[in-house]
Image 1 (tube, helix red, strand yellow):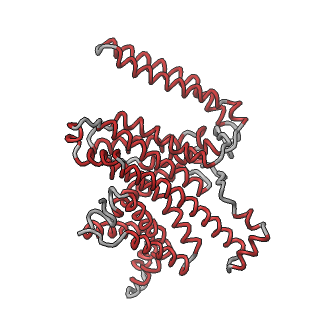
Image 2: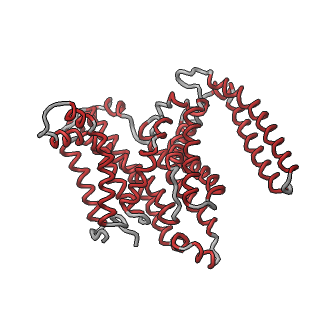
Length: 435
């Protein structure tokens, strides 16, 4: 049995639910949940490109998402002259040395014949390269981290426009995906999942511990969010305050709602652009070839298709989309918190639930699943305690009732699981199945 509702009706119903949240509770809450839903819809679109197009099981979504956020810091934060003078060029030189050593080691492995001498020369090269790298890298790091560590202590950014960082976020994630794909795409799907998870954890650990890069657990704050205005600036404009009061809002609430609407329009435009490109790719000869490879790799190889190369393409493209979403998320929040990416439930497995719920292989289905699950996830904090309080009314006041009400927010986990089970039972291919 599959869903027989037209996609327009499904999207209309979800839109109506968001409107009800705004009318019955708060427009600020509804728009906040909507903005988060639009961002994770972009992430789900990237995962769907990898899984729905090619059957690639990526469990390292959070790592690519985090790289997109890192790009915003490195591109849009102001240039730190003191950090550059103290040790940033030295750090960059060390990173180039590391890349050169790894490239030389790969080249030596290919050129030399297998045997004891190849292993010996490879060991000598790697050990010497490590000592050279540390000799150049460590003094630069110490010098940068010593500069006003309470407020900066990192290399800063390039002072470039924020929208450019969204593109760079996609490029960084695509570069990391290329490294993963070159080494892991020849593995079985379960080993690919382990490899992507491992790379993701390495990326997150690096961001949490390398303070010279992004301040680590100290976080990066006050990130620019152009072209969206700041609430404080709007509250100081007499014309805006008068318009907000005419609509029934005070200056503070009106500015918050206006900024949230600006973000919603921006994210919707970006999502629609990416969705149009994804749909065009899916319906092109390339997309039909990818689905043929997904359904039967052996038959595709027999027809002369380079399966590994096509897998590399779609894995890099999907990761680039995830990186763009990560950059948008940091722009929305105005800060980078590396420790927040360490939760695989929020940034990986919840995304997979969205793709499965909406319909694997269908781009519109992934977007729908993201909007539904994010609505459930976001409303749990406000609706959950009231609902559990209503259900526990027959119980006498005591530790059990108090515990159930206090843990009501955590009910969003079984609710998401229940929704996923119901969809899989009655519409195994998702709410909007692949055609």
